[in-house]
Length: 441
Image 1: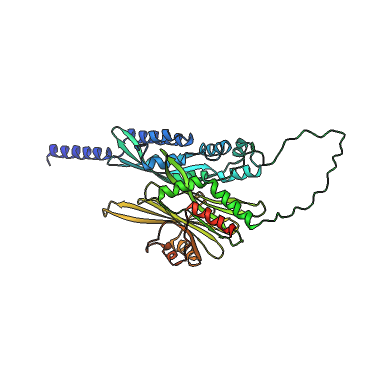
Image 2: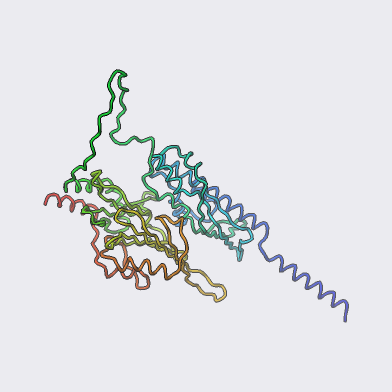
């Protein structure tokens, strides 16, 4: 054998192996990606939308940025609630394995796990203490919850930038909570008085058993009108932005008092409505007024497909089903409430459009989950049959639809609702006129 040819062949094979080994992700790229993810996590903890934007390739008017910015707006419930929201956000961490970073053609993907304090447990302590020190509540809780997500990055020149994230809406589900007690606000009617003189007999007088305050039909209508009038501006802003009727008045829980169901503007961008929330108010005769029982944020919005929803009732439950997202990450939630406004079931199906490189085709994949509460932080994956059996049961029992903004297509389980009687929605001013006419007649 020619020794020279053999030596050349061995060297060529060695060089080939060397080149093959160098085709993987470079340490420089891995380090740059890790740095961006760290900056992104810091921005989330600091609730700094501008800092988030700096880690991405988004412009400040891109839908991705607007969606993240809306998640980081905490200033809707007062200073005390903002302290709670910021405290929860400060516990966010992002865990991942650097070896799982996949880089190809200037694009990187990494599966991550967001970890956050068990904020529901913190909230329970706050409610038990009727407020109290926020710091004390956080120090008592050691449990955390984990949410899976994915971060996609692209190489922008010499820099890596985030171009897509998933799972963040579940991480920030804690901002959907309404009515956090503020210890700095005294109950209505509380009056500070001077201490009693020491020579006055202060033996307590037996307190009679409280009696229910009689409620007239006029009282109910007056409270309903007052509630709608308070939010009328935001309701009408949503009506104009989304070109829809917004309001309905129906006795959903069959207690003899009508509920108020309406859509109202949630957030604004440059003075224009960006998204709208669903509200259900119910009358409580013990207090003589309407109280907010269901608040579903961002049920419709200007980005992506705009969102869709249907509210319907069975003989025993009130059900809200709503969908949203984009073609590559679309989800439908079904929330079920009993007549005391407790959420007794929550199901979700996720639909994703993913590229299959082997067949060079796009495929739809589906996941199904069940949750214990309204928010999506405590769920477990379930099978397709379990999901469809549960959700179709509520649809089969549906008695009437009270609010909706779309007609389901034939390929989804909600299609069965088109056969259910639907009570038409009204414009807000029409609802107020309708209420006043009820008293006049």
